[in-house]
Image: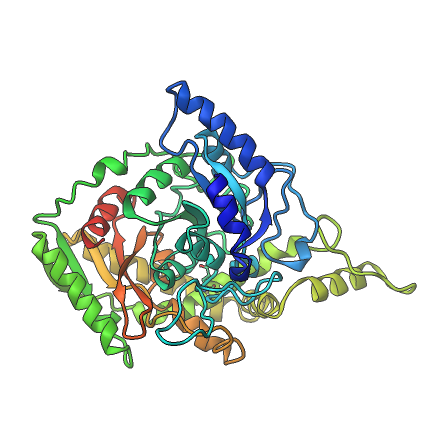
Length: 456
Ligand code: GLN
């Protein structure tokens, strides 16, 4: 814990931690030390973590990187952070992220951009760690903490993990409680660990998982021992390679990396099969209807009355002026865009044409995966992202749809509620990390992590 606190002090330029909790960390570390000495220490005991700012942490600023939650200190602890703290983990501080987890580059945060500790060979231009869990990714990659919590609505654990050369898993929807995690798109949101290794992900996911009566979508299922599943034995497993993930214009080195991953799994005794997920091309457009729709509803609660920021009002201002001014000042441009898109697709005249149609597409995407798994496929291998990390500022002012294209390989997994893991797979010709993604059967995170373990 002390070593991490020192590292954090020296790493201000990454802008990964936005709120330090050194006092809490030292107290928790002392308590953990006592448990370890008493021989009563779970695996996560004494492990110093960074916590994404999307998690409500009792008495500690929890702003979802938004101005609208300025000054908000929750009265309660999220279920996941409670579970981690009960297991003896230590909170070093809160981590930067895209505002309300909306973004793929960590450039929408009220705290400013997060910087990736990696650089292109021969260049000191700053590059993005990805988003929205960019602070988590950067902090783990730069050794500011041993692991971090992340959340993933359309790729926000897996894409930043790939961009920073670390491992991250989005569990099956319902595996981890969403209680106390600021909601973005409730039917897609899942928290998960971001770690150095697959084994660390297995151990940390174990501590984060389990049923929670406070989240009606949390599954009342036993949590298997994920670490015990890491045998490295995948003989006889069937790995699907979806033909729709060969995208036009994808860099040749990503194709090569993907082929290399196939070889590694084959060498370990798995059978590689070509599969088709025919509705893949509709996933991104459908996601960008469903996610904003749910966000517009979830974000309606930020009205200047109940939380954080409230605009200064003029003499003639009525209550709706207060709402409007507060929301105009409190939400950044990307969040406002999502609220407008979401409100539009849910409006009486367009609900069937957009929102309901997107929901039907979502069912088709889910069925694509079910068909493949029913045909005996154990895991699906794809690239994690269509490129390596891009430069900060490079995409910021471009057409927002360009930024959305980053999620092309990851959103299908959230739409289908499946577990997906990103694992580091090597460096590109610029010296930047690239990741591969494995997608697994629902509730079989252990088996999924075992496949990732072979690639590691
Ligand atoms: N980049 C995607 C978005 O902006 C996904 C974000 C996430 O998973 N939280 O919606």
